[in-house]
Length: 196
Image (tube, rainbow, N blue to C red):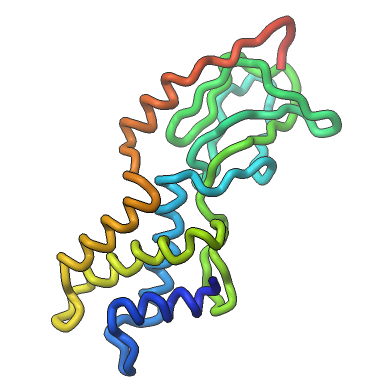
């Protein structure tokens, strides 16, 4: 669905279809963009194989992660004939940490789950997630609209109903502690015979 169609869907559900609107187009667009990010955080809907790279520097073990990255699944090293990184590494909230410092300048390519790179702005823009999820994603935007402090619109019960529908579609949002525990329980990747 296009942004204009998603916006119309939200307006129809909150019964805000007559001008002057209670909720601006920009507020609905912001809520829809937040809804797509939230769906990705909960359900890891965007798997990316090659958009994020890290240039290794000899002697450096800690590298910042792009803020769009939710989780790193695997890492390839090299550009001409990329191969799986066999060195052990750790993922923190903001950094990739190699257990052993590289001895040469190489490039890492991250296979990861991420949030959308660009926000929807133009009426013809579409979410990055699959079409199947677009209508369900709108439930979060509707929930947020019902929390806008407006005497005609504010409705915490309706907001909660749509938030529950969203959770039924995309699951609970994992806490920071849950994510950290998940990262800590991943089996370590162990090197064999060789440096990075």
